[in-house]
Length: 324
Image 1 (cartoon, helix red, strand yellow):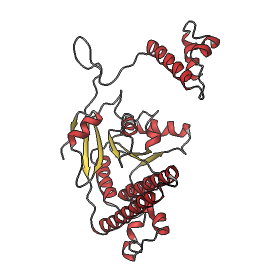
Image 2: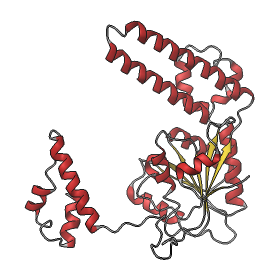
Image 3: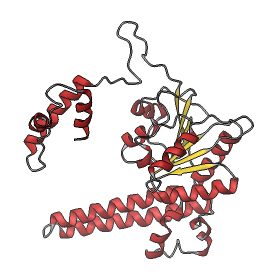
Image 4: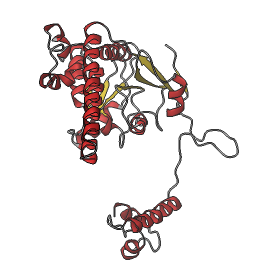
C-alpha cells in the first residue's frame, strides 16, 4: 500500500483505484506462493513502465560516454599484521575453535543415524558461532572477553594476556585505523566514514578517538530519525578553514540504506561482512551523486591474502587500486 499511495498521487489510470490495485497487484498471500509470485511479477512490470532508473555506470548510446561523471573511486586493501601477545592469543583461540569444530563434526557422525536433522542444525549453529567469535577476535579481543571467561581456556586466562582484553588496548587493526584517521582529519582535512558490524567495536573506536580528541559522531539503531538527520546534515557541510576533518561511525546495517554521506570521502570497512552487497550499498552512501572528491575505500587484508587486488576490483566494480 506504500507504493499505491505514490501511484495514486501520480494518477496512473486504472491502478490509482484501490479496488483495481488490490485485484491485480495487491493480491499477495504468504500461503499462496504461486499467487504471490504472479502479483510480484505484475508489480515489477508496472514499476519498470513508470520508473526511470539511472546507474553510475550507464553510458550514452550515441557518444558512448558516461551519463554521469563522478570522481574516481579507489580501493586500497590494508595489510594487517598481528604481532606479539595478540598473535599468540589469536593462534591459541584459533586452535581451540578448530578442536571444537572437529569435536562437533565427530559427534554429528556418531548421532547421524538417530537424529540427522536436529544434530546437523545444532552443529552448523555451533560452527557459525565459532566463526563469528573468531572474526571478532580479529577486530579486538575485548569483543570476546565474556566468551573467554565462560570457556575452559586456561592458556588465555594467563595474566600476560590481560591487557589485550581491555578496551584501552590497541589491536593491530585498531592501530592502523587510528593512524590513518589521524592523518586524514588533521593533515588532509578530510572526513571519514567508519563502518563495522558490531556496536561493541564502535564503542572501542569511540574510546580511542576521544583520547586523540578527534571530532566524531555515531549513527546506530538507537539514534532517533531527527537526530540522525542533524548528524548527516552537519557531516555533509564542508570543513571550515583552519579546522580539522571529522569521523562518522556507523553500523553496517544502518549505513547500507537511506543515508547521503557525500561530505566524507574516506571509507573504512572495519571487517568484511558475509554479504558483499550490504558493504557495497553502505559504500554507495558516500560514492554517489553530489560527491566532488575522489573516494578512497580501505579494507583490512590478512598477511596471506587469498584474493588479489584485481579480484577485489572485479567483485566491487571499482576503478583502480590505490598503491601505497
